[in-house]
Amino acid sequence: MPVRSSKAEWHGGLRDGHGHMSFGNGAFDGEFSFGSRFESGVGTNPEELIAAAHAGCFSMQLSGLLTKDGHPPRRIATVAKVRLNVGQGGADITSIELETEGEVPGIDAATFTRAAEQAKEICPVSKALKAVKTSVKATLR
Image 1 (cartoon, helix red, strand yellow):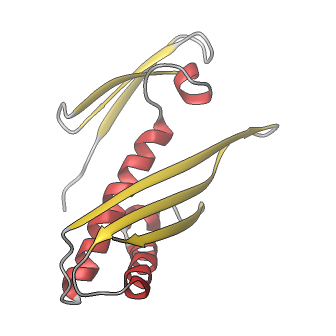
Image 2 (cartoon, helix red, strand yellow):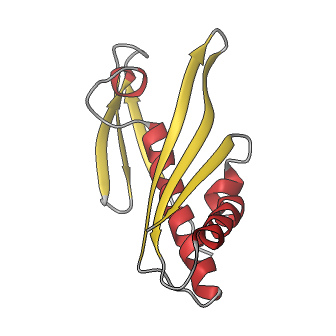
């Protein structure tokens, strides 16, 4: 089985420091900071990377389920919204909302929604994030 890796480096204190993340053998290389994570600063943050991983994994899983059932999709587009709340105990990822849209010939909206719910439960990233409440909204185009 393949092993995937990413790397991050942080310099300085929490609020005044800055960091750098990279993964995918150079496919992504970017800066992050307190501002990009907890405010509206420039750069990325760990939660955006979790969202990207979840959207990608879910879309592939949904495509696989639909294809297995004889309905290969033309297109699956998913947005994952990771909610980060900061409270007295620190920061917590409290929920993930998956919003997916599909172009799938030969199925109805209820069938697409059922497949999306199943994909949400069984994609590897969803399984890894079981501690976080995850919802899915599925729209068939």
